[in-house]
Length: 408
Image (cartoon, rainbow, N blue to C red):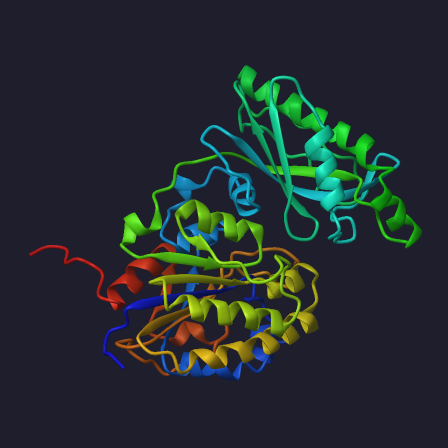
């Protein structure tokens, strides 16, 4: 083994960090034996992915961890979702993230349509039959109940509101312009037209008739949010001199990787991990990728889903199962391994919070500290102390000897 690593494996346990429930968190209870070994043989700390007190999204936090200041490069979640599902986004496009939802008697009764996943026919119908004069409408399904929407044409703006009411029992929100420009007003009218057309189009489709027969909520509406104009992002290899790849299931993370210039490496289906075996398959793919790439970003999503569901036991169980895949990291040579979390998703609030997340770095040349477990309750005692997401890449580049001296 060399005294200096020459590759970076950055693993993001999406939403794994939590707040104590009875003095315990899913990470502290999961029995993360292999991850604990990495922590014991490395350096640890806690991290504010965007900044203290700022509740980060998965988009802004991943940008920051990759070294792209979200205050500069973030225009909205939509462009990343669209790129992630395979839409060839172009400068000037207005892109959105979308949920399939259930509407009954004019009210949203399920914002995720029972976490519907059989949306191919629904997405195809929207893409082919929803029309607005003078605008190209591009719609594509993502994982589960998610999808992406792109509007392409002249006179459009991202300065508009979402249609997601955020809570069941309310109608789909009407989209409004957030500035006084005619472009914003026109775009808001287009979004409202699309929302109405979709409900009329999808309600009686065979897939929804079948879901009703099975007692499942139909995916007969869409909630449109996260509007953003597609930005220009400097490419990862030009920025850092590293050939990079991304292994992920979530369309958002895939899109961020693609737009930053990381090559997307698919693993089976795009569905979010619900078991440790699915996480293990992605880990295997990421480790194999290190033979070809200098930098690999691996996102493991399952814990975040359980956090949003408020399910402590499910989150703990998933993390314990996922830990088995970390065993393969213990024998890696010449690789700087970074394990962190993009944001906390406490089961107590079922949403993201600003609580700092644990981070460890393990590999040749890393100064070891005394932390022996990987969790948010003890990581603060480590030698990294408290850092920000924008600090990760500079520290990592220095540890693989890729930084230049500042000064004489």
